[in-house]
Image (tube, rainbow, N blue to C red; front, side, top):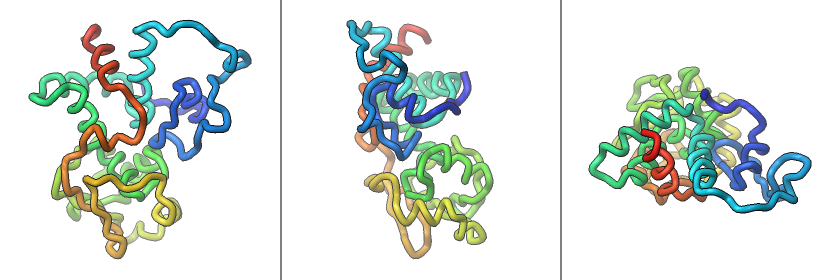
Length: 204
């Protein structure tokens, strides 16, 4: 299954949570699941459904395919760190996410487009791979000839989220330096990562 390109708010309503990486919009005004009978749905939630929904929150927020998510989980499971914590770290370290968290783009899909179109530099070199993994000491900057891109200017004027503690933004240089390794605490959505670990533990 590839990346999701459908209605974003509809997906957030189905999952019952705001996904800031997917959309700047909120489900606050319409928190019920989509569909004619969304507001009246009742019944118990199975363990499988609960685990699936937690996994989908992360997959849709970070905009990655099912295949790539499995690859990340496999890598996380081999780490010396707790699997859930490592998984969240790997997701947060994606370049498109770092561009979004720095405020250069309003959403992760928009950040991915900036990266793939060559508007961003990492340590002075153009990187056009959204999954590129940032590390402490890296400096992410807008290319000089891309500084006037409307999307970037608009987003920097009004960032979607408060910048995380692992990132230091330089307004004058329009750059962001990675000061520390991201942790699960910096993930900007409500998610029970242990449910995600349980989901994949039975399938990989």
